[in-house]
Length: 75
Image (cartoon, rainbow, N blue to C red):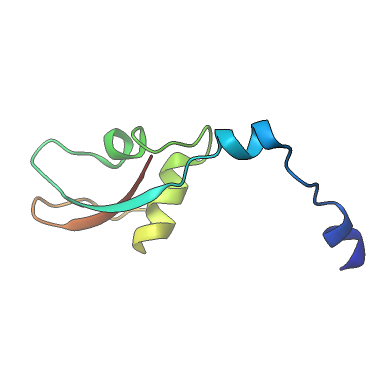
């Protein structure tokens, strides 16, 4: 635990100023929306589909249906 906490570093002023908070918004699934098309909107470099599934409690093989409400992370 100590090793982990000591691995954090203090942000300098430029790093702190560059940070922008992410927001959670609710998206209503429309016809044509897919998990991949919605995941592509997330502001992450990797694991977008997995993050979207986890955030919304979606099973791996679960299909989206028009009218479903999903949480989407945005900047």
